Amino acid sequence: MSLKRTVNDGLVARAAAVLPWRDGIYGHMSTARLPAGYPQFYASGEGARVRDVDGNEYVDLMCSWGPVVLGHRHPAVEAAAAAQARMGDTLDGPTVQIVELAELLTATARHADWAMFTKNGTDATTVCVMVARAATGRRNVLVAGGAYHGSAPWCTPRLDGTVEEDRSTFVPYDFNDLASAEAAVDRCGGDVAAVIVSPFRHDAGYDQELADPAFARGLRALCDRIGAALILDDVRAGFRLHHGGSWDPLGVLPDLSAWGKALGNGFAISAVTGTDALREAASRIFATGSYWFSAVAMSAALTTLTTLREQDGVAAMQRAGQRLRDGLDRQAAAHGLQILQTGPVQMPYMTFVDDPHKARLSLFGQEALRNGLFLHPTHNWFLSTAHTDEEIDRALEATDAAFSAVAHHVEELA
Image (cartoon, rainbow, N blue to C red; front, side, top):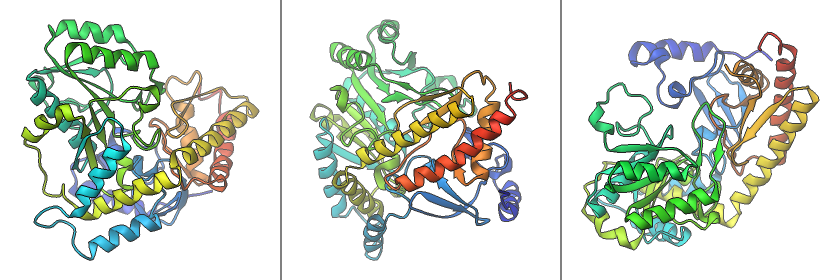
């Protein structure tokens, strides 16, 4: 089908005049560059679907780049947020929700004895690093090479606007390579405050890499041996892989966890949880924000976490993800194409074999879009509990058409 772009293109032109980024777009859409033909401006979302400003509707496999875990405008979440908004949002101090949400998080995550709340994933990972340094009195933090932990100068994937000193105490190691982490500790002479790690490697533009359980257990043992904090960056994966933390099924509990994205089903909130051993250090750092006590977002988060638990949302997303993965495998084979699907099924990602410049993948994304499915060709996708069998089957209709287009042009895309 042909997609209208009149309103979108007009907004792009207006944005380019008053925002300092190419096409007026920044953030996810700039870092994980949208292919030609994708809309940049949206009007609404409901359940597993979004509608752009030109009225085109899509089954949404990006879930607002992760935050939407129960579906857009989930009725119970919206009702809780609206009820609190009628009484106030940002007040002179926190409301009862901050206590209730901290109680819920500490009851949900086995390692967690306390919680504090921020707004973005970058806030949460940065606070984790500060707490670890305050607790240990050490400087260096081990960071898996190529892993994304936020947009602050210490972790941004782009170096423009940063200086060498911003990153001089962040020492790289290789994900899933315990020997490289041991070597990084040696390079630091034992001066290591923390090791930060994501539950699996989900760098944009690369096949996803699940964590080897032996690697996860080895990092835990390494931190215990040297007296460093193990920080789990669960911002992207949290509450999709496991209700209580993404490494909980591996039997590996971190000292600190950073949470975000799915926590508020689209409302702006993130969190840090930690163990009792780090409570005093957490009380000493200075970390604040004008909107960190937002009662509306906390109300949304309380309802989101409660609903996920009551409905076993993780299992629902696993079922939907497996249905999608199986369907993509069948379709690719039927069209004579080889694909690779990586990562957990709740956060799927697909690439084509022998597609070094991602030309096939880009065409696949564009054709899926034309057929009513929004996914990104170089960033992992996300599922929500709103992705019913019907929605997955509708998505698969679009991917079948996209595979057909790739197969038709496979020679010229080599």
